[in-house]
Length: 166
Image (cartoon, rainbow, N blue to C red; front, top):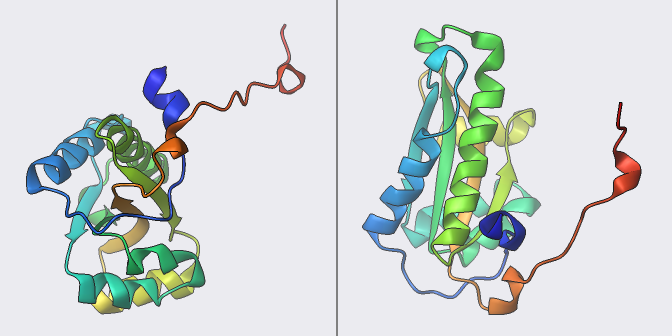
């Protein structure tokens, strides 16, 4: 539970680069996510070039932290061989969450950037990366070492009023 309790959305990063080894560890975590019928619909784009991060940051006001983030991972749904198409969104959400948790375990700050269901964001990413029609943008995760280390402090969000016992 420790990594779950520490995870927070972080939007301010140091300029320290993230090693390829650490980024690969985040991708490994993503690919360990549960997947309906083991369809593994995910594809990933790792962005570390400041000029590209700056351009992607302009796709939405919600993406502005990418202007200072040293890296981002874009998660994409590959529709070409789905065995449980209606479950791909859940598969991708689990993969995104695994990246967030592993980022926290690695001492990185992260922020889930919503893309799926926002046509203007999806189209901007599709155009920028020249994605094939079978590839659909799902989410992005901004990554970097947090400026403020106290962002990882525990906040108890348990609310017994939201639970019904039967």
